[in-house]
Length: 225
Image 1: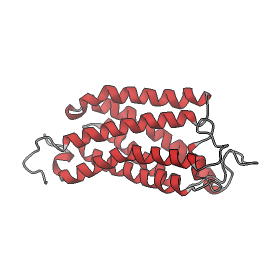
Image 2 (image 1 turned 30 degrees about the vertical axis):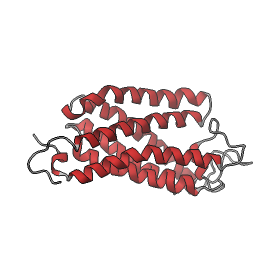
Image 3 (image 1 turned 60 degrees about the horizontal axis):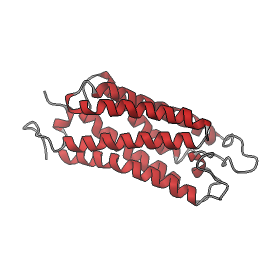
Image 4 (image 1 turned 90 degrees about the horizontal axis):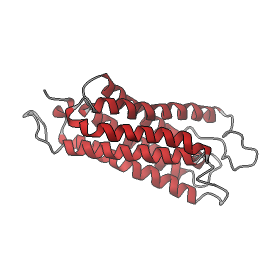
C-alpha cells in the first residue's frame, strides 16, 4: 500500500525535512543571541524567552522575526511533509495537526508581544494589553500542541512500519520535555522552558532526519521526482 508520501514529489518532502532540520538551529540561535543583547540584568535562568520579544526588549526583532516568525514557518513546512508521510491512523493525523498548531503558535509569538520584560520596573506578568493577553493564551495553546504532538506521534510511530524505530526516542523525548518544563521551572522560570524546548526541538530534528531518509527509499512507480 502506498502512503501520501508516495504521491508527493521527493523534492518537496526533502524541502519539508530540511525545514525541520533548520528549525531547532534558528530558534536556539535566536534566543541565545537575543539574550546576549539584553541588559546584564536579563537572566536565561529566571526570565522568560518571551521577554526577548517584548515591546521594551532590546533588538526584539531577533526573537520576533527570526526566533518566532521564521521558526514557525519552518515547523509548519515540516508538518506539511509529515502529513503526507505520516503513519496511518488517527494518532498520526492528530500528532501532525498538533505540530502545525505549534508552528502557527510560534509564528504568532512574534506578533503577539508582551508589553514589557519581567526585569522592567513595574512590569506585572508581561502587561495587560490585548496583545499581551493574547500572547499568554497563544503560549498555553502552543505548549499543549507541543505535548500532544510528541505523545500522539510516539503512539503512531509504533504502528507505522517506516517510523517504528522512532517510537522509543519519541516517547523518551516527550517525557523529558514534560520533566524539564515542570521540574526545572522550580529552579528558574526561564530555565524549564529553555531546556524543555531544546529537548523538543532536538526530537523535531530527529523526526526531520528520518523523513529525509524516507525520500531515499524505493518508491511506488507513480512517484514524481
